[in-house]
Image (cartoon, rainbow, N blue to C red; front, top):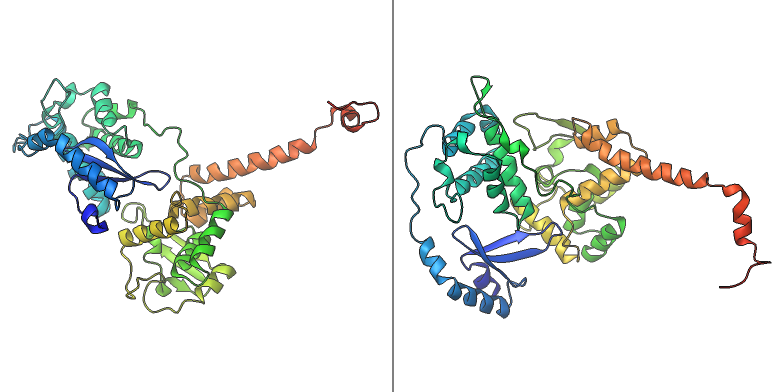
Length: 378
C-alpha cells in the first residue's frame, strides 16, 4: 500500500501524543472504534483498517443517518448559552483560528447524547438543569486524549463564564470540574544532548538548524518563528509583537541577537520577509512550519521534542544560569510572573540543594567511614 492511499482513508483520526508519537484510530460518528497500527504506510495498517471498517459497518450505517438538531435555538439551553458566548467580547476578540477551533468543540458537544440510555442532545438541555456530573460526562468522553479533554473543559469554563449586562448568566459550574492534566508537566523540555543530536543529523548549515537556532536564542513560538524576518531587525535587536493574544493583550518584545545566533544567520542569505522559508523560497504558513518543525525532530530521532520543548529548555537554561524573574518575563513576554517562577524556583531549589550538601559535617564521621585500618571488607 502506498503512503497516499492510507493517509487519505476516511474515518482515520490522527492524534499526536505528548511525546510526539503519531497514533491512529478508526473514528465513526464522533466515537473511537479502535486503535490502528502506528505505521500508516504499512500493509498491516491497511489490513487492520479494512477489517475494523467491516466490523464497524452497523455503526457506519447509523452514522449516515442525519442527527436531529433543531434549527430553532431554544432559550436558556446549552446551545443558547454557547451562542451568547460566541457573541461576547471574550469570544469575538480571539484569533480567527481559535474561534474556529472553539466553535468546532461546541458544535461537537451539542450533538452528543446525554447518556447511553438518554438519547436527548446536550444542545437542548436547559442550562439550569446542567450540573457538574453533566460536564464531567462531556469531559470524560475525551479521556483517551487528555489534552482534548482539557481543551473541552477549558471551552466549557469560558461558556459558563459568559455575562449579560455585566452579570453572569449562570453560575460557572465548569470551574468545579477538575482537568485531567492538573499535575502534568506538559511538553518535554529539550536537553543539550538532544540539541546536539538534532544538529548532527541535519548539519550546521541546514534550514532545520537555522530554525532551531532561532528558537534556541529567542524563545519564539512557531507562530512567531513563521513571521520573523529582516523587517523586524533593528541593528542587533529583534523587535516583534508576539502573535499569541495580539488582539486582546498585545505584547511587544525586544530581543538582543545572541552572537551565536548572529553567526548562524550569517550562513543563510536573506531572500524574503521571513528568515525560515520553504524549498520554493516562500514564507511558511504557521501550520506548515509547525508540521515541518515536527518532521525535523522526528527525522533526527526526537519525535518527543517540539518547538515548545526548545522554549522550555531555553527558560530552564537561563534560570540555572541565574536569570531573574524579570529577565525571563521580558524575554518571553510573560505578564503575570507565575510562569517565570516555575523556572527560577526550580533553579533556586537546585542551587540551594548543592549548597546544603556542602554544609554536611557529621562531626568528623567522614574520617571514620574512609579510614580502612580497622575496617573489614564486606
